[in-house]
Amino acid sequence: MAKLYVFGIGGTGSRVIRSLTMLLAAGAQVENCDRVVPIIIDPDAQNGDMARTVELLKTYERLRRHLRPEPGAGQFFATNIQTLASMAASENRPRDPRVKETFVYNFGGMDESFRDFLHYDDMPVESRYLVDVLFTPQNLASKLTVGFKGSPNVGSLVLNQLANSPEMEFFANSFEEGDRVFFISSIFGGTGAAGFPLLLKNLRNPASALPRVELLNTAPIGALTVLPYFNLLADDGSAIDSNGFITKTKAALAYYQKNLPGLNALYYLGDQSTGQLPNHEGGSKQQNNAHFIELVGALAVLDFMRQPADYLASNQPLYYEYGLERDERTVQFQHLDPGQSLRHAARPLAQLQLLALWLRHHLADTTDAPYANHLGLAKAWRDDDFYQQLQRLLADPQFGYEAWLRELQTNERTFRPFEDPALAAKDLNRVVAGQPVETGFFNKGLGRDYLRGKLNDALPKPVLPADGPAAFVTAFSEVLGQALTDKVPGFR
Image (cartoon, rainbow, N blue to C red):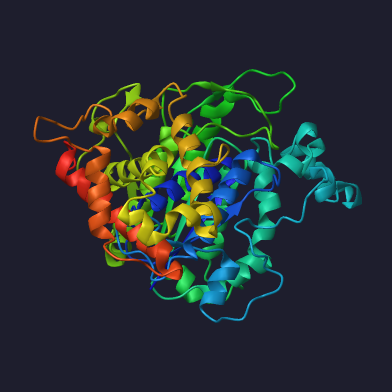
């Protein structure tokens, strides 16, 4: 089937891809394709947001290699996530040795100033005068090690090298009929605001030197552009000042209005409820807590993929915004629109939350149950790589699901769809915030005994060790999904 290439540009691109990966882990469906190929573009090689997203993607990819047969639609980890290089290997295509086994575009460790990048001192004097008009002395002196520090005029020049890179050539060579492209970027910074229109222009250029240019010129292309949704603390020593975010956004929007050739769908997101974050120009300290806006951004990717290709081509361009059912500072599932977000985010996430709670709080007490014995879980949970990767994806303190969920609750606009895990673990009937399970004398709801019995029914006989991971995913997906339908209000 077809592939979706997701270009995550800058810190916002990495953060939205992190939320997208959580949705895919939970079983959210990406329609009209069977593989997602993330390509993260960020010149800041030490960016904390990028680093943890890459670790999450690598963990997901390693985990999923163990799932044979592959999970079905709606099951955990149903979508295949691959790097460019691994995607070529799975299709028996020749691999370009210049393209590394990574989710990140390689800028080659830029550690020079913008002035040196331009070879300013070697320019004719007339060219230097022109550069002096276009760029401030601060721009020229700025080190490119941590990106473009909110300056898209700098980023647009540096990112020009992408068009002729081995990675872009390899991407174009792998592009096939039915494939799609989606860009994720912010509009109020440097890397994203510059990189998105530049990449789009290259893919839609009929005179481009890229391979398969005719396919790239006509393929469905969508984009998410994220408007300001946070502020930064004032810091006189930083080159980034959030007081200029709105001004930069207006300027970029004016440019986008006339300079996005061939874009089929553009999604706008932003939030006036903007809390203040520490002001880090880049590097490992730039690691912002996950935000509800980024989760909605991930839903934009899924929405784009649900659109038929002929509809995208015949209604150019399409513009989308997002609104809550009610403007609440604390968002729960009942505040999401029932036709889209609730169906495509709430059910998968609730299913994943039940899995995380069961594995952390109930697995140890049910290892003698038939389902656990048939999977050999007592030993496999300690020793097998699949279960080690699953534990990392759920519980790693830096990039894992539980950490991501906690972070979503720390912003000025919080996303708090579940009750406190410590309370929900003791009473699974209280997992979903505001949607308790009805219980009675003859109905104990979502108790441990109920779920253990359903798991025993789903795994009635021993499973070969090699088939264990796939059987585990299938059984838990079906049992927890059906439990939501049968028991939890709002999921029936």
